Length: 223
Image (cartoon, rainbow, N blue to C red; front, side, top):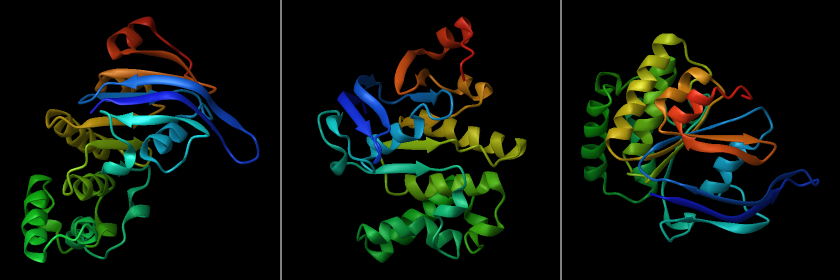
């Protein structure tokens, strides 16, 4: 799903301006890595796209519709902070309950997703008992079950060890094969090779946005 930002401006309360007249088109069905120095506007951009923050002016359009008509999948730095239930099974079914699905449908969908993500044997476990990589898989599974169009990931590997990162990368590769649009904030240059495009932000300005091979070839060093 293509994401279009038109003449977007945003300032935080207190006057800090983050974006000013930003125009940007993000391609759908690809992984776009959003990178740049601290304070460059990476997380703010995700929140504007998701509708969590309202722009001062301008708009965000998704294939011609607004964010209020879409479902997003969110993956954060520390997934345990977004878990609200005591078992893996209930966590995956939580969003479906909120969307009003019938209990029989929920049971079927949750079972299918847990098997797909290799978490079925952990269905009765507490999310806190999972490894870091498994927690991120649970976070993604809890979104995939309600079929979002776009995944927004904010430095999702920050708290993962190397085995956890490997598990997470395999999961993201699976999402790409399924045709999801993925926006991934990262400051780790080694993760950029997993993306299709790199968006470099510096002080709220887009200073590079092209395919990842070009970015790595040019050797940008501002992140």
